[in-house]
Length: 296
Image 1 (cartoon, rainbow, N blue to C red):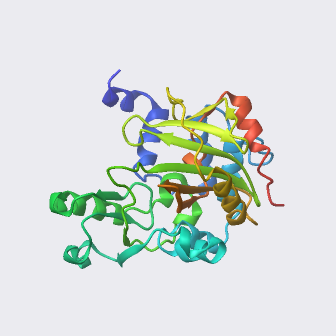
Image 2: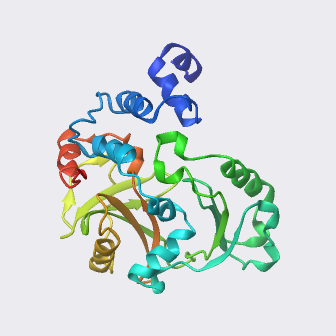
């Protein structure tokens, strides 16, 4: 069945497509989350007694709303938040912050850099050689992202009031050292496991490891890699940093990069996959859910 026909005939598929386009703004957060959860996971959402990891993320979206969370998902503001807790040495250098694309003076930027929107997920431009940058394509992508309120896609409350801006950062990669991306899941001061991505943006693979670097046998949105990743040099340090950054938070994902043996902070994510990516097998969704203590 082609996508157009499926869109016309399959109400679940139609809802999921429309929700990713930011439709249904008149629908209450609870009604929207219940419907999207059911259509994505294949089960009804229990908010009265959530048990699984994905269920508890939906509960936290609705009932754990603190103003500080807005700064924590703002890709510019979070730098100060993180620096105050673990140190400035882990922060990727900032080249500029602007409210519109026209404000960017590319002559003042170095040969390589990264542009990203402060308020969403996906508004990213990697420039390795400035003279080869397609400025027109970059403008189109960034300006489209600036008009999008990421909140409406998954009702992730922290994003609702983030001011849309454009951030320029140092590009950490080079021709010798790959950019290794490590995502650590932590719960109220205790980091439990790490996701390691490979081949990001091509055929992304994901493998999961506990604090002893023991592989965890589940999939979550991506297949496992064929060749498993090596243990990062700063494996222990990254877990300790995630411990510190997760204090007082029921659940948080803390992202790091490791470049030539040095650790850099990436971002904080409250709702991985927005709580709509099935964790397989289901027993792991339940097991990971046990790490989240619902505030009462």
